Length: 452
Image (cartoon, rainbow, N blue to C red; front, side, top):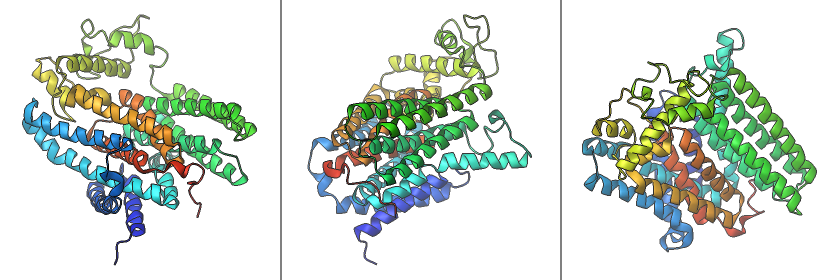
């Protein structure tokens, strides 16, 4: 069979979409590796067929060059700066090799979506797999319990909070980016159906986050809703395109949905939102309050300014963040492990600690791993993607922009630098970088995916 570009594009999109459906499903590691291999092979051929787009140095390739430099820095770090060479080498042979394969897969996937717009709808549906699976498993759990259950009783029924929050955040960026794109154009009759579908997708993400009682998932989804509302209203009143009536209607619906989700979350979530500022002040005073050195949950959190114990999850996360920032200042080149740098650096610095996990802040964890150079490369890639995407302004570039805008704050409050989530982060950064490298500036208004 001849491997024409359409077949390669179909194979790439099929492998990524299948991976999105099973990425968080337990017991699918072998299948994930098979799909990664298929997607990587398809990506190699797609990159080879479009090599002229990557072979000549130009501004739009800067994000890809930056990610490539990150891999070079990892090699340099291992050779000259590693504080645990054995552990770092084992991760280079594992998570970093898979990340390289994921980068090739992501580039091929981006090429396929940019050149074959009819394939985008499969990605737009598959990205909502995790929120949908979460909702269905909640309903199944309710069926097993013969009645509706509170979110806190459901949290660990199928998969962890971070999976709901992280993949829900990515799904929300797809809805937000496409809604912004649709309101940037003249509203036609068929556009209303697309607006309704993307609004329902955003509602699904928020409902999924509510059911999993995930604070960071709720926070990032609500932040994206606020961004969307601001952009829609700005475009409606400052642009001749679009419909003011439709824009105001959608914004009202979004604000109403946000109010319902927020009220529901505050009703069911563990305590912490009402005293979050007081709790943070207590948490970051790591020299006075040393409960962070004990196992999480083994001792009561210190009293806040209101005279009550700080919410344990807020205290632990912000205390770890403060400790992590201090360690980055002391060891600016990093420890060398994606998964174990917080634990390893505390041991290396002779700091007593019982917590052996991560900081719960992806950017701090990555800074602990590969220092300020690693963090600088990641953020430079994200900022350059945003800049280049704004210059292009087409539908697919808006997804790249919105993903980067979502990832920067989300990485401060979620474990995006841990095991498969780190691989997913690198995958989507390269996906976004490839989009802005090859997306046509003439695509605006012409690349609406075909609803075939």
